[in-house]
Length: 107
Image (cartoon, rainbow, N blue to C red; front, side):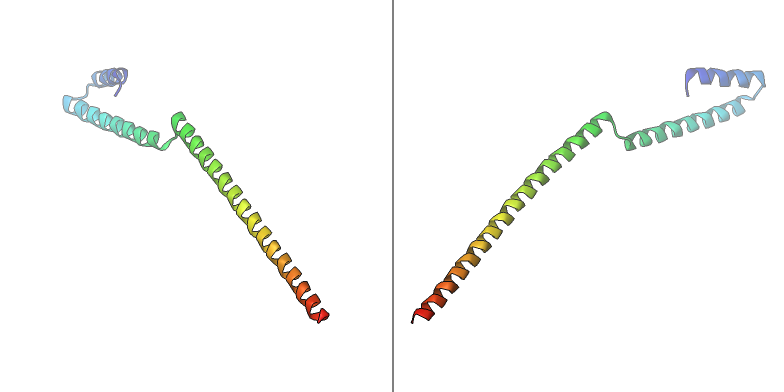
C-alpha cells in the first residue's frame, strides 16, 4: 500500500476510534488486496506485447515471408522445368510417330 494511502487509513482509524485489533485487521486486509492487485498487474503485464516483442514478431514474420517467397519461386521453377521436359518428350513422340508413319508408307 502506498505511504499516502496508509496515512489516510491511519487518520480514519484515529478519527473514528478503532481498536488496535480492528485497525490491524483492516490494514492487513488492505495490504492483501494491494498485494493481489500487484500480482494481477504483473500477470496481465506479461500477457501484453512490449515494443521489443512487437519488433521481434515483425522480424520473424518478415523472415518467414522471405523464406516462403523463395520456396514458391523454387517450386515455380521446378514446375516450369517439368512442363518443358514433358513438352519436349511429347514433341519427340510426335516426330517419332510421324517418322514411323512415313517410313511405313515408303515401304
